[in-house]
Amino acid sequence: EDKVVQSPLSLVVHEGDTVTLNCSYEVTNFRSLLWYKQEKKAPTFLFMLTSSGIEKKSGRLSSILDKKELSSILNITATQTGDSAIYLCAVGAVRFGAGTRLTVKP
Amino acid sequence: GAVVSQHPSRVICKSGTSVKIECRSLDFQATTMFWYRQFPKQSLMLMATSNEGSKATYEQGVEKDKFLINHASLTLSTLTVTSAHPEDSSFYICSAVRDSYSGANVLTFGAGSRLTVL
Image (cartoon, rainbow over all chains, first blue to last red; front, side, top):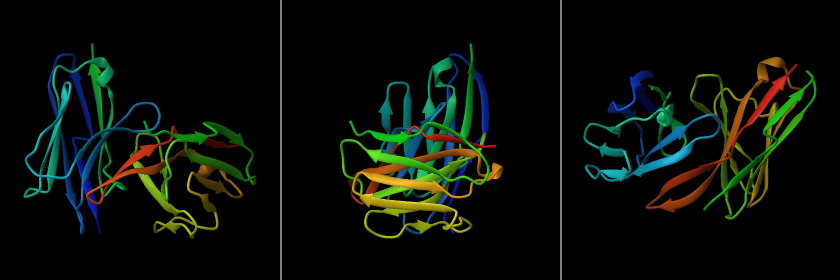
């Protein structure tokens, strides 16, 4: 059975801190790993990773895939209160991890 | 950019009634749409895969007679919660496959529908 595990489940930091969110997976037919940010409503797309070792960046967010370790990390530097959200990792577009709830305090 | 419209955003109904939620891809065709359910502080749980012109594929444990899915066109999928009960109260989200790159699909999500059954 396909499995996507995220850690930590919850994280509280202060503005300016750097955070690393983890996602590990076990799937039978891997094609891509996607990261989403969910605030109050539906998730919004952050990154799609298909190749190992290639970092994707968008502003203060970056992500990288390690196919050997079957995992990915999402980094957020210089966190802001607006980064507070649930960060979801998905494999194969439909298998979601439980999410990491990030709270950034002023 | 790709937009998925979901309607209604909120619905309150009495126990025993049926509720229909619509999911539309506004500027692209979506042969595949997905329906999820999300409980408070939990992740998205895939309920079913909706394929245009064919029957939906339901995940294990999801009652297909209770959650009717129709994907009659390339831009519209509907989820009908039949004979709703308070335990069906939840946040329902749809998504549509937007791009296919090397076999990888990126999803565009609707804004979700919060169902409250009294």
